[in-house]
Image (cartoon, rainbow, N blue to C red):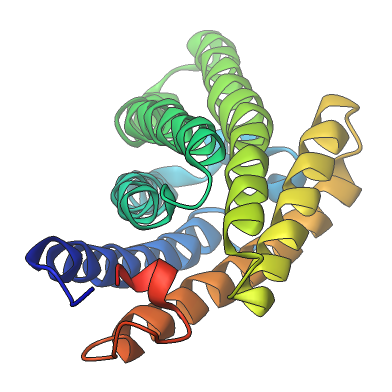
Length: 245
């Protein structure tokens, strides 16, 4: 079977989603580091960011907004593209794991949007408030962080990503062995990270998060290379099932 218009369109969307994920996602990570002023204690306890001041508040705003674009909206588009191209292999696995990916996009995206708008507002209010009101504002910010940062991003999202990567590992195992194995590793690390967060093993969780984000970036780049190299390949190309042939 030759390359269809649909396969060309989904390839283009996949490439665009991956470029958006890499660009916006990496920029978001740098802005989060700047918002936290590279302080390890704030990474271990993000609610301490409430006292970061106006500059940190604006870094948090744009870090969260780009996080929404790079890690959530782009992932939703990519999940759809991969579903279109891989469903023929094992429809049930493709459907269930894509549901997990879309759920991740919605849950984490809402969290990012809330943090981008509410977090900086609370930080600005804290800076301008008198001593009597600072405690209340700090408590509100701490609840926001616990819900978004710990509850959604580092627990629910981690479980949903683990399911998605597990499914992709199974779907890619026949041909794209290296990417399949990396997907399995990411699934395992994400699942372990969710459990560490649940058990309040903060340091181990945050160290594992660093590993996950490094491997995730590698995964993005690897998949992007596959999509780019697939242009013009014959129907029996090595990555035919992934490139839509």
